Length: 233
Image (tube, rainbow, N blue to C red; front, top):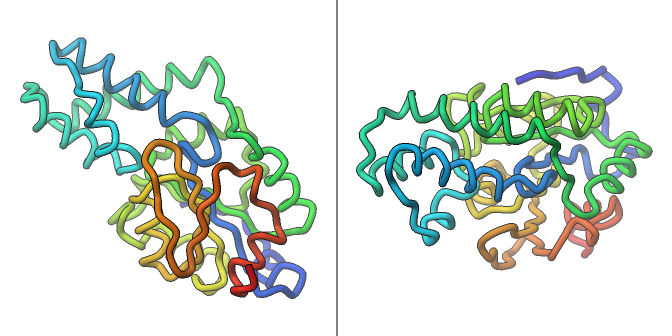
């Protein structure tokens, strides 16, 4: 976990009940979920295997070890998990070197959070090397704290990543708004006790108590996030 959190950022933003906003990366902040699937298809093609499109819903949003392990088992590919993880990360890093598109509404939301001094973190199941490459494009300055999947003992869907982010800000999980695009990420955030906005990227996510579902980040602003935490939306 990397953090540049000054003491002032651990205070409640503008005295509201909202203490911090925690964002997922792939498919939430940046339009890269399709990149991951393309990379998986390419790597397994090199290994002599064709991926079934139905498997995409299984691996989306999950940690690398789970997704890669599932695909090894599903295809019967003769490769160990560590070697496959390196191949996938190498191919993905090369892919994002050509540019990383932001999701609709992401730039506007990040600017609004910064303008109001809202502590903001990036919480991803991707490895540190991938997060840093994405942020080279998006801008490291948007996030006072980042949590990578290979920096926690248990990544999503376990609550540890979001608990670590909240603790890094000195915030109560129940006063943190999380923005996620997959069921795996939503499960992680809700298990941590956070309030969640789901913006589904590949598979549908149903509304639930303490959870809002919207079609894109264009429907999310600071007032929306404050209302989510206070229960006034």
